[in-house]
Every structure is written in structure tokens, then in C-alpha cells.
Image (tube, rainbow, N blue to C red; front, side, top):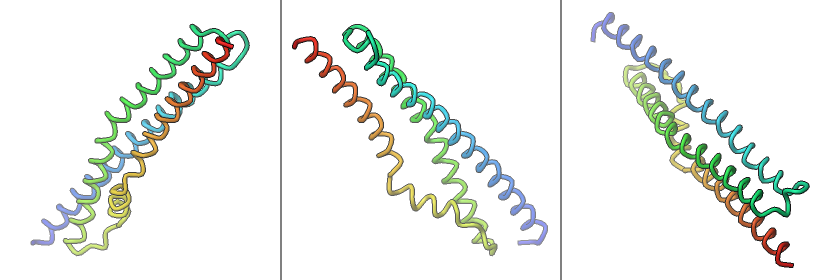
Amino acid sequence: MENDELEMKVDILLAEYQAAHINRNHYDSVAFTVASILVATSFTLYGISFLGEVRNDFVEVGFLACVSFALMLIWYAYHVYVDPFVRLSIKRLWEIEENLRQLGFDAPKLHTMIVQETTKGRGRRIVRLILMLAYFAWLFRILVLVLTIML
């Protein structure tokens, strides 16, 4: 491969690397921002269900539970929508790192390490755990309310 051709190929790979990195950062940070707002609001509604007149009103607690679930479902839907963009960006970054190494450059190994860590699936477990926590917290809350009303 000629020197000019090699230089152009490296420049293209580095430009794509930068674009993929920006793409991953954008979607990943927006997903975390959306999650922090919606999950926090959902658990805040759970806390509100224990306050004042609301705590013994089945309709109001039920409404708060429905809104809370809706927020969690919106967050989950957004997560499912955005996650492939993040994963594909990481995959492309890893491929570019491999291409640069094949061209004889000491390329960074950050995304190679990220790919190795993401195969463990920890992120998906956290999402499921948060959803299950919200579900069982509301289930417990409604159960406590029903028992309070019955007694």
C-alpha cells in the first residue's frame, strides 16, 4: 500500500472513530439522563403514595401506581430503542481499533475492553433489577393498602 493511500485510510478510520465515539457518548448519556429522570420520578410517586390522605385511598394509590408503571415502561422502551445504537457504535469502534492494529499502529484498546466486558451482560441485569424492584415495591404497597382497608 502506498504511503498516501495508507495515510488517507488512517485519516478516514480516525474520522469514523471520532464520529462513532461521539455517537456512542450522545446516545449513552441521553439514555442515562432519561433514566435518571423517569426512574426517580417513578420512585418519588411511590413515596408520595405513603403521604397524608393519599395513603389510604385505593383510587389515588392505584393512579400513582399506574403513572409510575407508565414512566418505567417509557424508560424501558427508550432504553430498548437506544441500546442498539450504543452497542453498534462500540462494535464499530472495536472494529476500527482492530483495523488500525492490522495496519501496524498501536491503536487504543478501550473499546476492545468494553466489548469484552459487555459480553458479561451486567447492564441488562441492572435494567431488569430496577423494573422488578419497582414492580414488587408497588405490589407490596397495594397489598399493604388492601390489608389496611380490610382491617
